[in-house]
Length: 121
Image 1 (cartoon, helix red, strand yellow):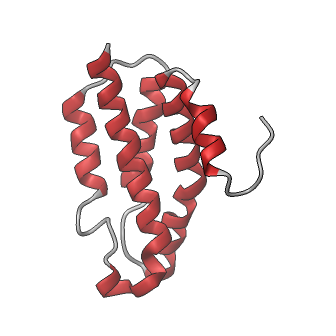
Image 2 (cartoon, one colour):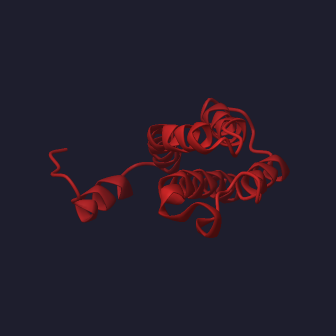
Image 3 (cartoon, one colour):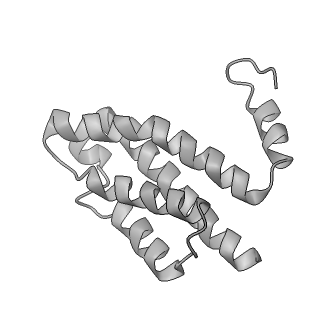
């Protein structure tokens, strides 16, 4: 695949050809790339809990390796990533928390994809 930066339409078309499990793996890899934004933010402002999103992505990788999807566990991890002591609020942190928010949103979306995968089987 030959892509140029920000050619999201091309990326979307390429991803459509992948099986669902491979799309989730791609999403998990993307989450791994943005998770350091959250961890750095937590260190910078001495707030949050990097272990929460790390545990969520760890669960996704385990599912990708064959662990059965536990919808209750996935939903709990998703909720944990949205807790007010984990998900930074722009009212408290301004624009400095946009990248950490995006990381958590990406992780939550990947968790939802895992549940959808289980329901489609």
